[in-house]
Image (cartoon, rainbow, N blue to C red; front, side):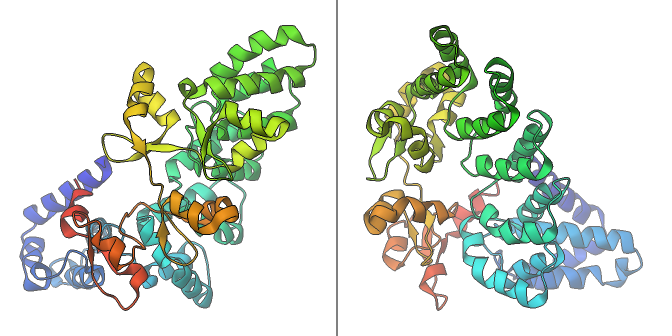
Length: 405
């Protein structure tokens, strides 16, 4: 990222321009350490900061320590977070006592690593959940790791919260939890105001009803323009605004994202919005919202929803979507093992949607794989026995380095 690049450039410049730093950075203490050995990095960097060359300069020393620890986290790729570092974060940011912090760390260290979360990410997410939300630290602490492990991006959460609060006139807490629901899907925060204006002004819904609808419709992947176009047609057929809205939503779900929207129903098969409507009748929207959305793998090897394809490719989205393969959507289950969405369906049967929803988002494709699964990804993963098979499959160094580019 630009921030990462600037940080590393600044560190290199500092090392080059300061003979004391340059001298110590070339010492064996640093030269021989493993890129993934974060505790050793921290220990060495703290040693560096205590040297006479800048022991007297407290401001400079603090700057070096902060920069060094941040760069250590970056080099460690966030997959190297330890129980100790998570416990320290829980104590300092979440105000957990030592016993509770240790329990939180032990319960979440594998999940945090599977989602490839850094200390900076956790800190930014904490402030997005806490600052100006009227939530207490206790309330944030109770939900924090479930939010983090859904792969929620702090900036996206903040954008949703601000739009729901300022544009939709939700109270601070209401906006926070609605933002979490939307950011965890995820959907684009840009259409929030447009959707709100339609529901509250055009459809003339009472504010509490408009609040509920704006979250549900955005979560369902329905686009404001598609809804407005359908409303123009339906409004002339009835004087009941709610009836006209329900019919408009029915139509807009089949045309949003170029008509590419599909979700995994209870039986594990993919169905379009129209097929959900035909099968579930009036309950279609409830079932639709409870069903994971389809994603496909784009040319960059990453997983995207139909909405994201539509936003990026525009009028050519359907062509690229049809050429793309179904995304595996891997998540870490409560047993510590990683499964694809198809494996959740096969293993958990009728309860698979609940289990999938509660499972941890997996950004590190090696996390949670057993020996056989790890060996099946020789270009990306390698097996390093730790004494616990659930965290013995790790990214190869060459793959890890690619994430820093």
